[in-house]
Image (cartoon, rainbow, N blue to C red; front, side, top):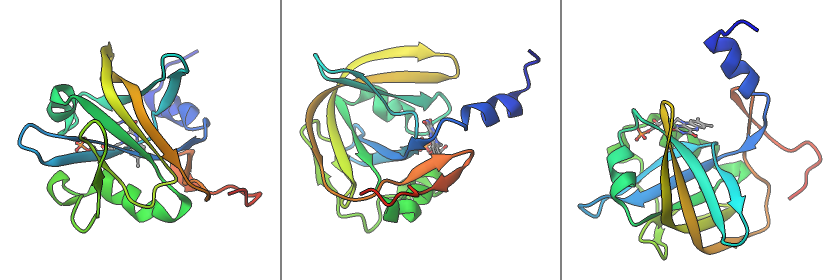
Length: 162
Ligand SMILES: Cc1cc2nc3c(=O)[nH]c(=O)nc-3n(C[C@H](O)[C@H](O)[C@H](O)COP(=O)(O)O)c2cc1C
């Protein structure tokens, strides 16, 4: 098997995922957040979840220094928010977002399909990413359709579930 980075990314992109905004509060009390699709459930007892953060992330230091983080699982109508938290300068991503603060001090995205509020449980090296494992302190979900990501683009459920 030859190892071509583009082909590797294309292959990983065959795994359809949801889309989350992961968030925390930095040492100055400012909200930080970015779009991720590396969210994975890890354990039911204890309740653990993880996401993988690029080591080049502007928000890396804030996440590593935070007592916890929140994951907001986006609904189908939140694609613009996903783009904003992936592309806009970090400083303006929260403009106009009416976030409420979760149990671990991280801001939650209003209108998300689901939210998970986590205390930091473990931080592991993962190549050019860092694996952040959260202990879930609180969670909530509401009816609706999810925003999906597949082969490098957004997608929607075809059967209309949600
Ligand atoms: C659908 C989607 C999924 C993404 N998943 C991740 C991810 O799992 N981890 C990550 O570090 N960046 C991911 N990104 C890229 C970040 O959102 C993007 O690089 C962002 O600008 C990082 O901001 P920061 O430098 O403030 O951390 C994803 C982007 C998109 C659009």
